[in-house]
Length: 419
Image (cartoon, rainbow, N blue to C red; front, top):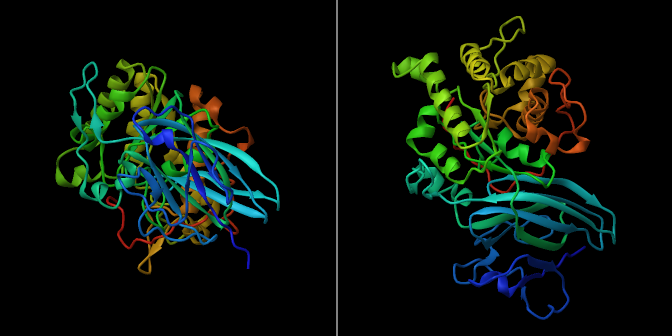
């Protein structure tokens, strides 16, 4: 039986207050070089150590702990990974809360390949900025518990895949443009299988020249974004030219039922977001909410969010903002697959199909549609999309049959907030 031994070598200066990046990690059985510290698979992360495998981390297919963390200040980091080993390997890398970075990178035996990607590390602290009072994002209970990795002061990498093999790792802080995401559960990082969002998949579609910072959260609306200071957090770190994708609607629609809002208040709150982003030199992009999966007895789609999609389009038109019509693209996607095959885009949990949220397949397709929407709208950041994406047509989606992304450890029976 093949046994892959991973020894992590960390530059000790990376763990001191006067550290000088880049921080280099070498997975090797050889003795560490001068100035490096060997870390075995048994080395568990502690606050005093500042690095190590997460306590009780599940084992990956190589028999090693899946999650490795290292303390880092808030910011964007370029991760350069060299993959490969004595045996043929197949490695998937995710970051923080299951943000897909490298998907199924295959390397032949005794070979190696180097890939880079950008990870955004953040905390809930809001620093003072023009028009922004210092404070903290008002996190939900689940963000403090099961979603804590999205907000802590460390980078967490998930090393996964059917035959993972990581030789080397280098981490360096970088100043690159950032794409910020604000939205609901269909955008937010979902912490456990079988749920996923397009925000978690969009990270893998950009070149290693862009950071994606996902500030979306399940169950939220434009109003919640303001009240919980999520927009303030983004504005406190946003640099001129950064892009902010705004996609709410599913939960905003509920405000009609409770009498606290309607499509007009939705538009007003959307305008507030866009105006504040523009004032900071950012590029707001309005994204209409994807449809819920619903067909009538004749196999025809039954749209449920058209009023909110039209409202979003109107704001984008009036304010001359880029608009990504994910609502229309999702309808074309579902129609192309039909009533039965379209079920493959949604998770089944506790024996019940969830027609609102998505699994890895559905989330990956929606991320591709968002990428195409950025292209079609001429958003400058679209130039940083990977060259190998090729044409993307929602009416001709990638088939669900044979689609696979390495599943993360852990399964949740807790449905994301919102509907």
